[in-house]
Image 1 (cartoon, helix red, strand yellow):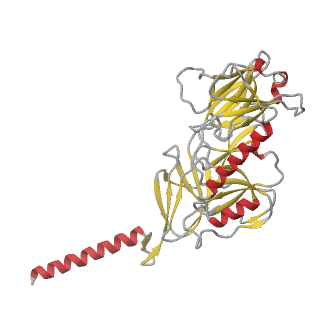
Image 2: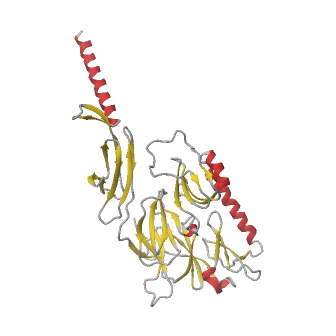
Length: 394
C-alpha cells in the first residue's frame, strides 16, 4: 500500500513539475502583486558581432546572445556595440510568442585594401557578382572577387589583348558587355551599333588569342542567352507559391533573386493586388509593415518563406540595377546614393552608411564573403585612372 502511495505522490510531483515547465516555457510568469499567472513573450536577441548591448525602450537589458522575457507590449529595441553601426526596430511582443532578432552590425571605420594596380578604365561585374571584367590600357582581365588568394595583389586572368578587337579599343569606356547565363562567356560590343562596328565572342576563363567575330549573329546569340536566363528564372519561381508564380510571370519584371533564392527583388509592370499565399499567416515573422497593393513602376522584394512583400524604392529612382544589389547573406541590400554606400535590411528598414570615402560613382560590387569592391583613385594628381579596392565591412 505504501509503495502505491509513494508512486502516486511521485506521479503527482512529476505532473506538477512538467506543467510548471510547460507553463514557464510558454512564457507565463507569476505576478506577485496580483498573485496570478500572466502571459509574457520572449525576445531572442542575437547579433553579429556578438556581445552587443541590448536596449529596450532606452534601458540597457543585457548583451547578445540572450532571451528577454517581457509582458506583451510594443517595445523599441536597439542593438549597439562600440565601433559599429547600431540597429533598431519596433517590436510588437505578444504573449506565448518568441520574436527572433539577429542584426548584423558593421564597423564605423571599415578597412581599405588595394586589389589591383592596373589603372582601370572600365569595370563590369558579371550578373551573379562573383567576377569582374576589367578593361585597362591594352588588355581586358577577369578578376575573381570571391577567390581566396595569398599574394598582396590577387592574380588576374587575361581575357584578351584589346588590339585584337578592332573598333572596340578606340572607345574602351563605352564597351558593352553581355554575359552568358553561366557567366563563362561574354560578347564585347562597341557603343555604336552601326554595321561597321564589330562584336566579339570571348571565353572569360582563358586568354582569347583568336577572338570570334559574331557581329552577324550577335542579336540572335544574346536573345538565346536571354531566353535561357528566363527559363532559369522560371525554375526558381517554381519554388515560390503557385499563385505568386502566376502573378510574377505576368505583372513583375525580375531584377534579381537573393543569393539563397528565397527572396525576389522586382519592379512592378502593372498595378495588382497580391493575395495571401500562406493562409493563415505565419506567426512570429518579420513585423515591418508590408505592401500587398502593388503599384506600377515601384520596386518591391518578396520573401517566399514568410510570404511577406515590402516596398523598397518608389518610382522616382531610375537605373535601379546599378544602384542596389543583394548582400551575400540574402538579408540585406547594398545601395549607392549621394557619394556613399549604404546597407539596408531586405525589408527596407535600418539603413546604415558603411562607406563614405572616395570612390568612382556607379561601380560597387558585394563579394560572397561580405565585403565590398569599389573603384578608387587615391592620388588623382599623379594617377589618371582608379584601381580596385576592397572595403572590409565584415
